[in-house]
Image (cartoon, rainbow, N blue to C red; front, side):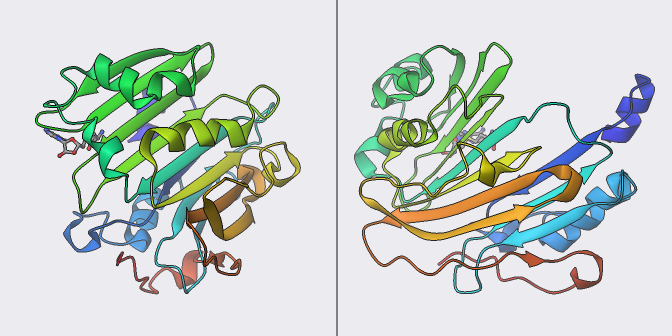
Length: 264
Ligand SMILES: C[S@@+](CC[C@H](N)C(=O)[O-])C[C@H]1O[C@@H](n2cnc3c(N)ncnc32)[C@H](O)[C@@H]1O
């Protein structure tokens, strides 16, 4: 995998990060995605010896069904902090989701425009793609920064993801960026995970998100050693937020512990 490819190019792997939310349908995932423990074992077979070893966490309190999974292995700290923003959105507003049906918008370019996606990062160059009969993906680039969006608009299991890497707290206001993304999809629930090679919590992107119409369910900060840090926040429409939980380390000996990844 990555290590072999790097060696064939006379390069060495410096750092590895694998993250994901909770699967909507955990029971139908193929190997090695049947559990996070299995994913970690597979990743460790390639990267487990990198630096001082890997770190793996399931972030989210026991009362929350949705978790954030993080695997990190790092040989050395990066010279400058690189920020990654990941948003997972479920329960998309039906009207907003309809935009991603070919019957409604004929082309990917049209979907990009009428959904509001074009306004999220206005300076970026977008390569978009529409699926038949529905669904949408785009990749974009802006200088050193990239972003990507994938939309599954089907009612009952609608989902959209937004990921951006290379933008920083100095140039982009996180609250405004997240608001522009939310405007496109109006999800009932969503999470925001920010990773940086430095300390996210002390950066301009590390504070609690205050977004009109949404309440925070939980907010968790996790240090990843040489791998930097992650701030994970989970929000939902309206009231009824829950208390913040603590991250649960599943390092090494604890991997066989089964986690309940099902989503109600
Ligand atoms: C945005 S795509 C997922 C893209 C993602 N990069 C992937 O490869 O899984 C998911 C949406 O496209 C629709 N779709 C239609 N044809 C598809 C295909 N051949 N492969 C994946 N999704 C497809 C799905 O029903 C869903 O609404």
